[in-house]
Image (cartoon, rainbow, N blue to C red; front, side):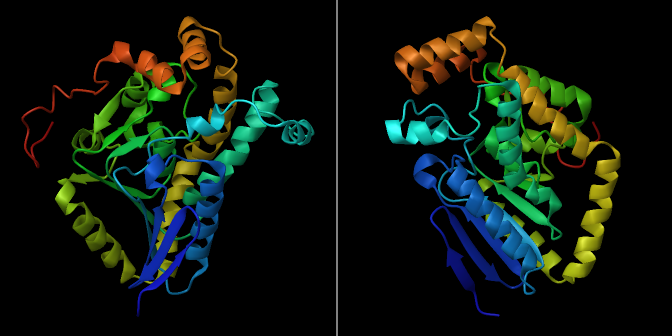
Amino acid sequence: MAKWIKSSDFIAFAVERKVARITLNRPDKRNALHEPMMVELHAALLEADDLVDVNVIVLDGAGKDFCAGYDFSNVYSGGVDADKAAEAARYRSVGDTLDDDAWQLERTQALTAVLFDIHKPVIAKVHGNCLAGGTDLALMCDMVIASEDARIGFPATRANGTAPNNMWFYHVGPQWAKRLLLSGDCVWGRDAARIGLVMDAVPADRLDAAVDELANRLGFVDHELLTTQKRIVNIAMELAGARSLQRMAVEMNARSHTANGPRRAQFASDLTQHGLKVALRNRDEPFGDGMVTLHAAAGRSAGESV
């Protein structure tokens, strides 16, 4: 079939050869997530799931990064004009109460957790930075293929909260989930593949070809059968608590926002006095390059046992 293309303000959408390609299209902001983008992404995923000429979905990011996280400039944008403030006062506000915070986080989670819920398989194609909110997207996908030099992690756990979509345990088990979330350190794509955080990692110049090969291969299978296999595995994950954990992750994230430890207090102070760039620098500086080194896996070639 001919290529079919559709786009919105922040999402590009193309369908060809049974594959829908949905692209986060905010490269000037490193595809940082804000509500308009997430609403458009949610709609695009549901449309791809509905289209009869789509069997598989690929999610990627335009520009240098898959997704560098949540848009902090949106979250920490400061005051609004009087009219907007008066209207906003009629609704729940993040941080007013723990329940208000959890309620808002649940609304955000509903926009991205649809990756797990839609029937058709989704492949995340990860390059550049895949941080914080980027991992909330990628780890909800059915399979993740990354470039070897992709940078994957959730540095915000150092001072700002925890992952509201928390699929880390289901990919890497308890020890690695704790190692990455407790420190906020990142892993390179090649190491993420070694610990199971992503399915595979390839050199950056082969990423497109590797994802295309898998997507086209799945495209040969009727979507009813693909749906069957996806939902069987997802039900197994639900029986292992994946759905309940997402609800708990949101509530724990809201709870973490009430903490007033020295690291969180310093971040807030830096943000108020010096701005976001300085706050992020001071948050991350003690961690050096913030990258995990896999000593046990060093020097091992593909196919060797660990």
